Picture (tube, helix red, strand yellow):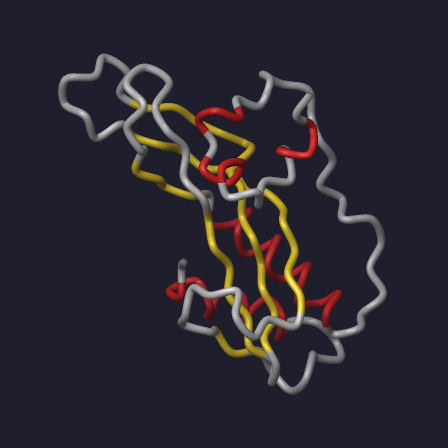
Length: 150
């Protein structure tokens, strides 16, 4: 989870006219217990392989699984799932695209606040196939691309 990005989420929500009130707070516990609802989506970022013996140093991804949860009392959190290195199967170290994270969370909180929103605007783009076997979100059943599995 990325509680350090909560201020950017709130700043983005505050720029809406009229602002969404009451404001949202970040729920610090990584738990499904007590959620009102949740939503699986994706963000972008880069991964580094921490295995010094591995020849693959890193990779980028536009298909990083994330689940955004709403809790009673206008609390939320977002869990970002990792990916494993294709070469050595070690869990990569993520450097997420903070803008994509903030945009996805803000969009979902707006919807949950009752704002009329157009289509999500985050269309699937052509690119390499999603490699389910390396996606921790797929393994947890939380990847929006996991629904594409044959």
